Length: 301
Image (cartoon, rainbow, N blue to C red; front, side, top):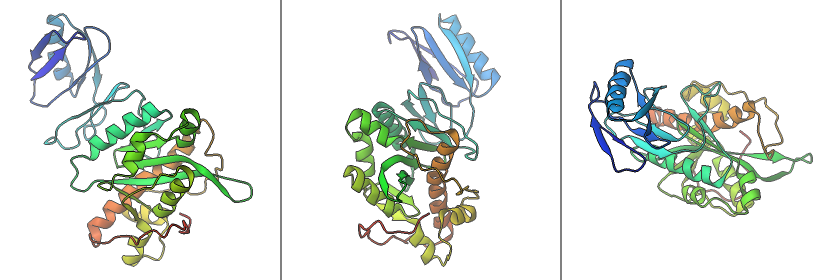
């Protein structure tokens, strides 16, 4: 059954879809619902029943069956049909970028967008047996080779990647987003990446935010016998991803990034997630990373 509610929430109309697949509705204006349906027959069936009840309906096809229906207002992810649908409000639109097939990328530039993105990501990993995300940061390189504050934070699974303009957000809001701080400090969620401890150290140095449960994939790779522990090499082996590491972009603190820069940043976080899951399938599931000594001296990815 599908429940249709008007904006006033006083009217509740139940209509039967053709199949038993679960759906959610998204609301914009009074008596207007956006139906996310998978087939034309299902769209027609629900549209006719809803219109007969006095609702104006617009429809939108489902873009990816393994991720779910996407709109500019809400996200609905159901990679496993046995798991409950995730229905999270998103005020920013997802992007499908080259080199990131199957991944929805969100560029988050305000505290509100970060709060929504973290809520979406938490809901997405909530039902995973092991709560893991790929983790990476980007920092402006100064002409003297020194580094400034972390400019961009990337957090990802295979399906979702958040590219967070953290320096812009902090500069404009004068505060580190609380939702992001809680996520980074959540010890139940593992953050994985090549030289992830260096990224963790950089966040502590930049914003006094200490990340919990950080796993450096470089050490996993060494324990599995790899000599080449760069993210590019590991992503090619475990994630079937070809990373372009020839981008010499220094101005990560710019207010707006180019699409190719967003792709570069997002790929690193997604690749980190894919490398970890690939290693887990082939290696020792008990492998852990040594405790960070706080030096931030790991080798460059």
